Image 1 (cartoon, rainbow, N blue to C red):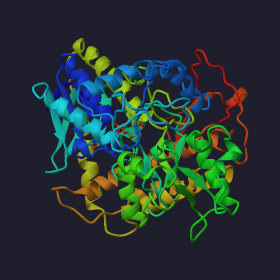
Image 2 (cartoon, protein in one colour; image 1 turned 90 degrees about the vertical axis):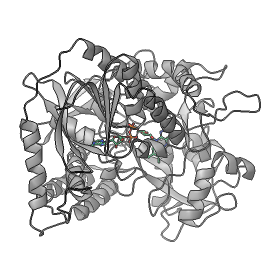
Image 3 (tube, rainbow, N blue to C red; image 1 turned 120 degrees about the vertical axis):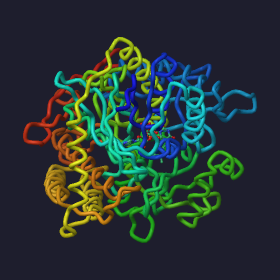
Image 4 (cartoon, protein in one colour; image 1 turned 135 degrees about the vertical axis):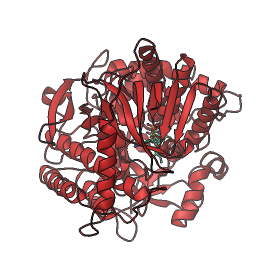
Length: 564
Ligand SMILES: Cc1cc2nc3c(=O)[nH]c(=O)nc-3n(C[C@H](O)[C@H](O)[C@H](O)COP(=O)(O)OP(=O)(O)OC[C@H]3O[C@@H](n4cnc5c(N)ncnc54)[C@H](O)[C@@H]3O)c2cc1C
């Protein structure tokens, strides 16, 4: 049985940053990923990363913008840590080889982003995630003597010992179908988000909420799950993201009358209000008949107002996306976009060192909820979150490992998971396919758990998810082989998505107010007296989510009305 001091599940930015930090703390590290590390969704991050590096900026201003962006649901102690440590982290990335864009004076260039009171987003054209991910991968290679890599291994569950501590995982080698137990003194979940619970989404096909569901099944609470971010600019047919960098560079949003409608809801920040505000304004235009496109469900994003030379230099990926996927030259004509599912603010509840309430289990990145994003994440704060809390988790997990004995593990979990996989493969080919259930889940969530929500819609979504869970227990697959059997992994992922979706809907039903990304048309006001608190969901004895609350940490910024 492989044994490691620190075992990290996920090799996106959070996982790789955690691995680097742990390796530098003198312990043995393993990093596991179901795809090759540089294919993690972090590679798609486009617009940039926030840090108060400008001489006229201050981390407190970044922190206040983040608190306001979160609609006062973010925990201010965690936000302070993230914003204070941001400039050092960006400089560290620059020093290890990330080629951030520079201005004519040779300084790091900073672009405007939504909800920010000053330009503070460092970027590499519109491939920032790719640039950072590749540099971290190279840096980790330097530590090969202490870092084991399990690439294309799929974690099926966390192992919890009799004392309730996390002591390892069970995983399947995707190449051979072999299943194995891994023992670890500390386990860090860095397995990314849950976008595939929705259809369409900007998220990659691998963003299937695995870590959230595994932690939930192991007894960890999931926090702020109702907070789902709809990004204001995605392509209708496939959900592809058009980066906020476009509006950061000056692009306009227009309705069918050519009106810059953001003047109605955010007269100061206009297109650069926070994402929840912009997405709601767009959806209102669409719902009231001022949308564009054949079905009237779109909005124009006009990038032609940005100088062409600048677009070709700083937004080159979306120039290609426009051409290839919408047949539009964005330097010459507006492109039709709509709000689309993009990010989950909620996740496995952690403290500022990534510790979950389960001993030995850490979480960092999109799978985690520290909570720095609260009700709404500011653009370019997620890359920052992955790196700061990835590093802090790696350091803390390594320190913990130094004083923890190697755990003894039985093969009970291994045998259970091997049997679960055999049963999926042996299912009779009748009933529904995994892909059909996934499709219904995605469209249900996108109809009822989107920009605008209400009680009856959420209730019907909850019932649908419960029915889909029953159907999924018998859903069949076609591939019964052992080598690269993605079909069987798809069936396991469907289970993760359904558990996670159930907690999302349950929390959205529970929160009878409107705050951040949760806008309830039946409760349209923010209600601090009753709802200035986090909703936690844990798995109850009957398998359904159980709700509890935890307080929001307020340090220096009292809740106030949010205006942009
Ligand atoms: C299109 C797009 C653009 C974005 N642009 C920006 C931006 O400009 N700025 C910004 O701040 N944020 C941006 N975001 C958000 C940000 O990129 C993500 O939140 C962040 O990269 C998530 O990183 P992560 O390390 O938590 O997870 P990921 O990068 O998603 O990595 C998850 C890892 O977990 C592994 N994994 C998952 N399940 C298992 C399993 N069962 N077994 C083994 N391994 C598993 C995967 O293989 C992968 O390696 C963007 C997101 C998208 C989708």
